Amino acid sequence: MSLSFRLKEYIDSQRITIKEFERRNKLSNGLIARIVRENGHMSTRHLEVIGKNNPDLSMDWLIKGIGDMLIDENEIEEHEIDQKLQYDVEFYKKMVTTLQKAVDMLTD
Image (cartoon, rainbow, N blue to C red; front, side, top):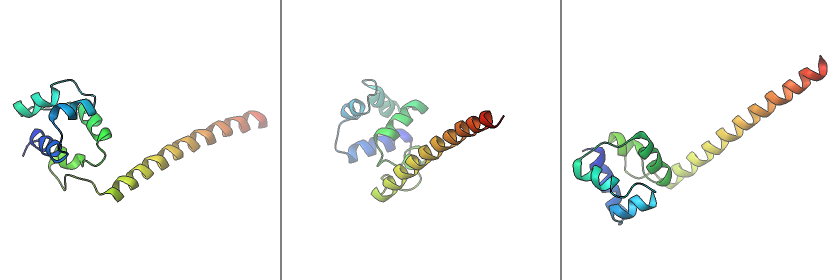
């Protein structure tokens, strides 16, 4: 089963049209319809947009056909928490670096 077939299966499971899916994901009019019709490929950028806008859709399933189509709600929440924690860690690393530079300037 191809990515385009799996994407169509996901869209059908949401009980929306391809046109509505394109609109919701702010994709070019006809892009997904063409990909599904021609069993075409999708750019990384389009996959990122779809993944971001459809957090319940398993990208492993969509791209590789591995696992279930839908992600469990608990997994979505855990992923969002992980992303927030990663952001916090990066923020505090930058803050520590800035403070260390200030301390170094004061002690020199």
